[in-house]
Length: 456
Image 1 (cartoon, helix red, strand yellow):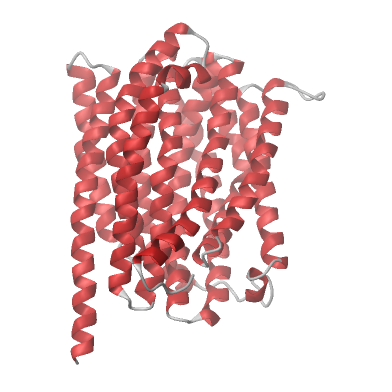
Image 2 (cartoon, rainbow, N blue to C red; image 1 turned 30 degrees about the horizontal axis):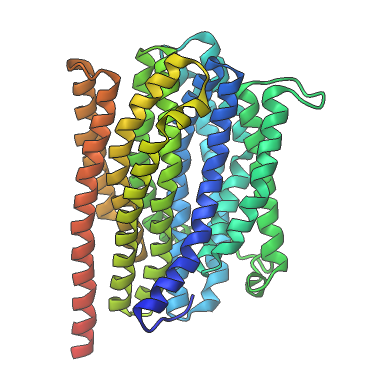
């Protein structure tokens, strides 16, 4: 990261940071994408089982990952304030916290997995695949959380290309593991959808070990000597990260869990409906990685400028990201509209499933417009470390407005399963507008604080 003097320089730096994040996020999402697509090739039950398992795992992972993301604005603001000496201990404490969170998730999963699956009206085979997909995936949770913490550190330095390189190396490895364990190759039994969990867990170990090796050997990361002279775990340091990270995590959880809740409610419909819904959601989630990456880039750039007390520069970065999000939303809509038949055919060969998937994609075109507008604003707010109101906005817009609206439309109108998607669209739209109002308020607040401190 470095200071910029004009709009052209800001756009250039933003793009340098943004594009590697985008490639990294898309590649990470492609792992789930390939899990779903390749499982679907193994059978409709495998696709539905992985869909249910992913719907339970993704909200938990993204919520906890929100806590880990807090290290990004912390490091970015330290860099902006030129307090580099504090960075090493912050990252070490974040790694301690990531391991603790991973262990907590594993213990909760051990207790709650069976009761949750038993409450769902699933076919036996679908339930079996979902259960063991999650169990095998759990083997990779600890290295995954460690990797995400280290990645946040690398990204906060503006070195987003390194995360990209790691994931690009890991992606074909994940494909190979999927091929081996899903379909049973090279003497390995065919595990179907469960094999996707095995493959993903092994991939998590690969990316974690790669990240550790790079931070230990490659400049400029090795200059921070993250793995030498370890400090003791300190609850005070954890609380600082949790103060920022818990609201981020819950806000992300409220957003992603509404999709999980909808998928679980879809269990009242046929296996084909579940499969079609998940296929449309899976691909639109892949497109969502673009505005999400814009938001992550804004957290870095805005956080750096806020740490240096250059509030006008932080504001400019915010508007660069928002305008980019609007453009991306329009582009995504065109992609989904133009290739809906092709996208549907990627997931399944059953004509009934393909037809249902195309209908769901029509609603996905609308919902991603609001999501692509809101994600960059959330990233900018994280750069200011303003996270509590984002939590409230997420709770109200998704769970108070979005899900009840969807449930009413699904159960009391002819929309049926598509009503849930209309509810999602409603919730995301309300959330995006509220986030924009909050960003404008925070920008004014920080500007006034700087002006008042200068006056005194």
